Length: 433
Image (cartoon, rainbow, N blue to C red; front, side, top):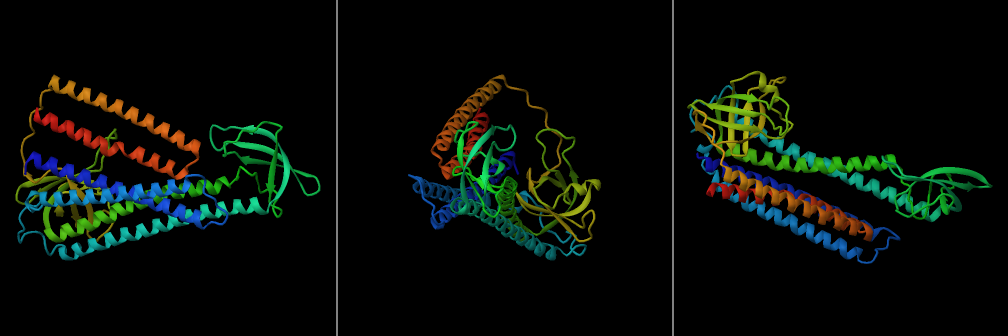
């Protein structure tokens, strides 16, 4: 129950979360690349450009390899953390007969944690269905544009104006004849990058059944409302899927942890992070066990929030689990009668109450060391993003969509584990001094 124990547990928890998030992101990248490649291979008339298929295969292999690497590293840290928290007394007092059994059926509440895990798995399936619907929507839009390109009536139109908008899509305003000289006008979304000038003659393709539905050989002119709906669905689906997978994994771990440790009765106080400021976090939960020891937990991200419990300090509750896999069980919620489980993780190990330590005086040498290391890190990050932007520009010029997506995704996320490694080494160097 030392400060080093707290730091080691926190470090392992952060690394596990990083590797879990990395495995999910790279798995989604591999899945998306495989789905896009499969669609391109089966779509009639689709022709891979030079090197495109090889790029798709390379992206899938790299994403799959990174996903498996994150899984392997996560399991490695999981084994290390399991050895670290094997002793329950770091987090819970010894089990006694005075743990409130009878006031709440603790065995039944342990069993009720399992449906929370299964509910998260259900949300995973729901978000996967949302993403499947988004992919199907994009496929339908692409097929509709291709069908219009093949079967639509082709006429010669004129560019009446080229409009670049600070918000929304750039457009070209065109006039084109329909039927026996009926002149129509349309705004066509300009997303191909091809240059246009006022008065230029271009080929306009319109639907014979609906002459207002038009495109050009280069501009698909997809319905922007549906495009934004599908983009929003993609963002929501990816975010929801990532959060649901993390929730499913964490609730399963919490159920196993509580099943192994049982529950301990305690008095708890929920302390929200007020007032509003930068670096906000979820509420802290101050726990006082019946044997006089105490521990500080922090509520984990979940739909089972702890903020409604702030109005009743020192209320009775039960604590189960270890380290980052802990659960606070309240006799009832604010608006509900059944017991209410709040996920949490430990900020400290269990200890007796003690006075606050005197502030540590600032060391000028250590301050200069930290500033120097931070300056180097900022310079390295600036160089990293400069290279990333240059790579994105090259891939845009080559029109390699999936490699562009992969490079942008990996390049944006890579600084997170690199920053953790860098600052962990700085912290270790400071401790040695």
